[in-house]
Image 1: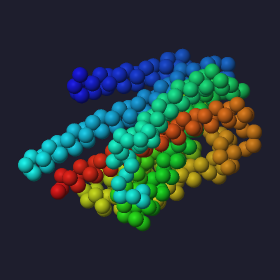
Image 2 (image 1 turned 90 degrees about the vertical axis):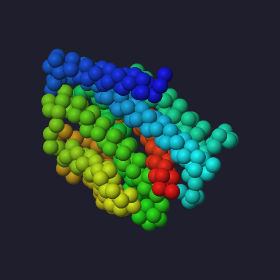
Image 3 (image 1 turned 180 degrees about the horizontal axis):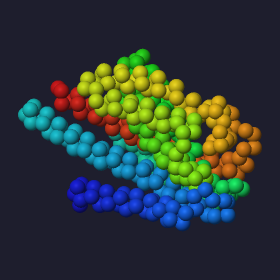
Image 4 (image 1 turned 60 degrees about the horizontal axis):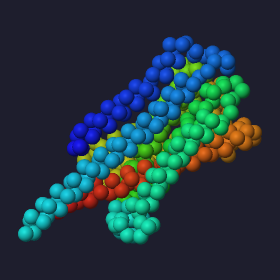
Length: 87
Length: 242
């Protein structure tokens, strides 16, 4: 699988995860439990917080791994250019 | 930072304790901690008497905030060291730490907003802690913008270092804001030197400490990786200019 295809697949994954993160929040708002007492469950808000946090971390990690691949490619290109100049 | 070659950038596969192995170990430990932390919070932490299971947000929101303070402290120290030593690796560490800090403080603002909606009925209010946190976010976004838009690299590093030092003043202000300007949104300090004794019971405190450890390990891994990348970027620029 080439890098671009992999990138697309991971980007779709991240987007889906973001939607999943926002779903519980939307459900909570639709239920209208804002500002209510302690008897109601607030789990959709809790899940939204946890999902958003991990999605953000994984997105950042993904950005770093992609950038690192680009840097490695650039270094290889520069090495090749140098070798060609020297020969 | 004393030697000229960084262990991160120049590590070769040698002994068991070389840099790339250590980084992999750090990543694995962070992953295990992440999963254990989720299990610990959802299965082991008690609900709070007033807000019920909404309080579970505390175990992410507060460690995120504390870890962002750690990241900005690293930027502060690295900026000072860069201005003193003029070593680009300190600058790389400062930038990497500011980037991660901005990510963390953004998450603090978002998660705090999600917590505030069911707890107080509003997404946002100009409470002193929220306002000072937003100012902190703006300062470090400014730091990154100065880096992005100043064409001369050494000038950019110098300007950013000054912002990294001056901007750090807001970090203690964010923490102490809840004491200096007491209000209903952040009535108590649960953690830190000014926390009220018994604000958290032993189980909650252990859950918080575990979460804190998880985020600090993650911060260490991400910082290491990002700093190494920044150094590589500098090396590529230097090679291109040769």
